[in-house]
Length: 270
Image (cartoon, rainbow, N blue to C red; front, side, top):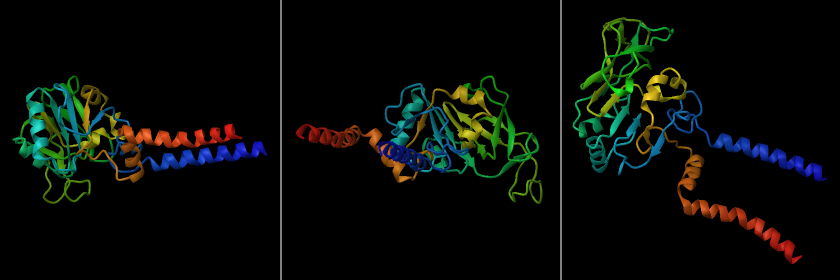
C-alpha cells in the first residue's frame, strides 16, 4: 500500500511540474517568458521597471516599445543621457517615434519590408548590413545580420544595407512594379542615443547570429516598463508579482508552513 502511495505521489509531482512549466511559459513575441525562437528568455539583461535613478554610464535597451512614455519618464531619460548614459531603442513599427520627438531627436523609424540580394539565405529579408559608423556597439564588427529591418532616418548612420536592397512592398521577394534598388540606413545615432530598426536581433534565434554585437552591448539594462518583453499570462504575472513583493512571498511561505505545523501539532496532542 505504501509503495502505491509513493507511486501516486510521484505521478502527481510530475503532472504538477508539467502543468507549472506550461503555465509559466508563453509564445508571445519578445517576451522574457518565451523560450521559443521569437522570445528573449536567453538575452542576458537586468530588467528595470522605472526610469528614475538609472545608474550613470549604464546602457538602457528599450526593445520593441509598445507603451507611451510620460513627460516625467522622458525627463528621466534626458537626465540619463546628459549624465553619460547610453540608450538603445530597437523598433521596427515606428512606436518609438513619439519618444524620439519628445527627446528632441531627429531620428525616426520608417516601417517597411527591407529586403536584399546580398544574402546567404533564401529569405530575402534575412541579410547582412555593413557597419559604416564609429561606435562601441559595433567595435570590431564589419557586418551585422538583420531580419526584415525598418529604415531609420536622421542622425549619424551606423548600419547600412548594400545597394542591391529594396523595400519589398508587395512581399513577393522580387524587385517589381515601382520598387527600386537602393541603400538604406537601419541604425543611426545622436550622441548617446542609438536607434536600431530591428528588434529581432535580440530574440533567441538571432542571438547566435551576431555574438560580437551582443557581447559589446553587455552589461545592459532592459526597460521592462515599455518594452514588449512582458506577458499577458495572468499566472506568470501573479508569480512575478509575488517574487517582487516581499510581503506576499512571506505570506505564501506562512501558508505553506501552517499545514505542516498543524500536522505535527496534532501528532503531539495524540
